[in-house]
Length: 112
Image (tube, rainbow, N blue to C red; front, side, top):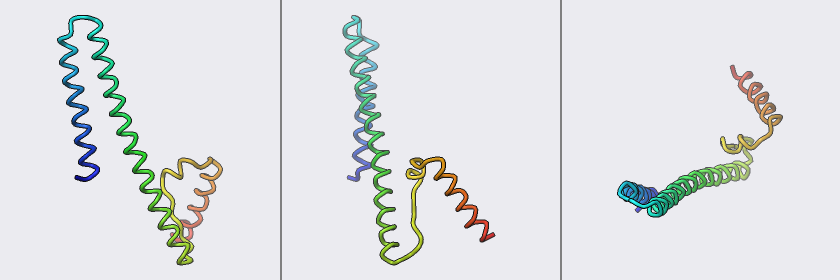
């Protein structure tokens, strides 16, 4: 099984459990049972959020490693080209962003 298959299977299990708890909540008669079931549902929701968040973090780490490897290869080959990703661009200051925009205009403006 691939990681995607495992994650999909786990997400399906959590969603199925959440649906079942929703049915139990409808049938619950006393307030203590309802509160306990609602807490269980909230726990499942937070688990789902954590899984989705981890997936997003893993994607970022994956592409960061690829870009680092490509840039290392470019450095070893003495190429002047380096690569970045959108996640890195979000982390830079506005002044740096403006400098990059000016540089982009210079490079693209000269090729038009």
